[in-house]
Image 1 (cartoon, rainbow, N blue to C red):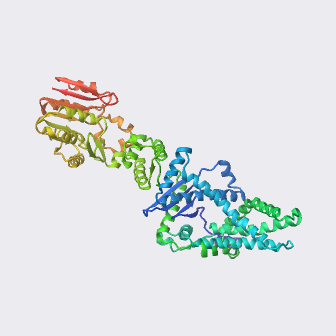
Image 2 (image 1 turned 180 degrees about the vertical axis):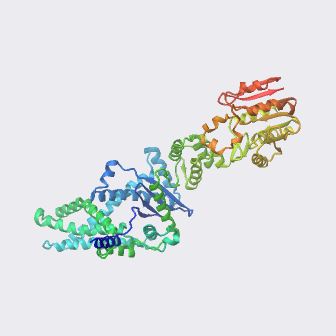
Image 3 (image 1 turned 135 degrees about the horizontal axis):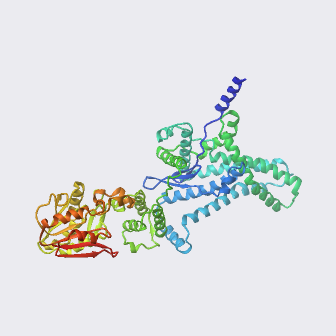
Length: 613
């Protein structure tokens, strides 16, 4: 008995096949894949790059429950698939399509007058038109053709003929649209979608070369679903309308009879879709001779009409969408992504600020990104401006990097500092706006023939600013830093600004020789215990050696107080930057002095010390 049961179980396993929950749809120059929690659309854009837009499903809990009810779920999934599919198709067109000046004007007008997005409007209109067209072609037209036949006694054959018309129109429609080049390419991507899903279900490596060897025909294809819907429609509608005509309605008026039968078919359409969905799911789980009979028509239509052999580039697009769905379904923390397309500045900037706020990134960084890419000042970011595809790509690239936490100016690669362009990267701190005031004070203090020393030079921004802005005063500038990497960066900045500076690798005054009329220093002044509390981009990306000022933040100031007099010329001046609340404590370290002044930054904080000995 056990042996018989085992044989039965093995037979069932043999007939049953591995079936992934992921389904898909071809879109313009791409593929959309649908998973349990998300959908991902991959498109090859006009530059040949694969872009992916991935969105998580936002379904009402009640609707989610209804999606588990047999037959009802088919109706819901049909509507959701229609809406999502149309949106994916429209979004893919926005990525692949070239910039359209008229579309840009319309998008701007809709945004300003009605706060509407052009693509949302097009998607809604396209969905409605698609439903109307489908009803007109596959329901209204066959019934209209029946009315052209001379009246005869009502028999079942009249309704069989109605079914023949529907089938003929369905096949003719699929064949006729093949004359369009875009449809042929769409069907190639349809083949790529099927090959990818087949490869996954068969355990084949998801690479274009391996996937290409798989079949482009798949059991759960939408074409098969439509054929099953059509077949059930022919059977149910023919029987129901025949029964109503013969035993219930008895309507002799041709027009009224036509409208009543048309209405009955519309009412029964959701039921037909629900039955077709359940049959398709059932058939997809098995591979035997009985089920093959029902699968055969759909597969034949796929082979002859709705799929074409894709190339490896198309398959790569389908694989990208499929893998993105797998990734997001497996990990709910994986963020959504969007296509890089043109759009209205106000909406795009607003979306970027929202994404930055979620990551605790200052929204001013978003404004800087847009102003830098668009080549305008932050105050000139007019809300109605239309951003083209090329600009949008550059913005998106910087935004995505910034969202990782990397500082904006490290991403951009340079920044403006007191009339100088300063190259910045992880070798040194990013010059702060308040430090420009230190450079300004230094430039005002320097006289003809002065020798200047910039300690803890970092990127060299202060030394370069002094050398460049005081070029007419025959000023000699020396810059020192403990970090050899920082010295290399500072040398690059001196070359970039075409100024002569003597660079010395030195731990404060350790490697410095001579006396100077002005010594400028912006040393590390953050308390060691406060560094973990700093913003992510500071504590994780900027060099700690340039931040850590010891337990109380004053370690470097103590060393300066002990040694600075040996390196200052007569009537020389020391200019220092310090942290908030440190000025008075630092002045106490320089007890013996002839003159001292505390200067404030733009926020009114005591930030700079000017000391003479």
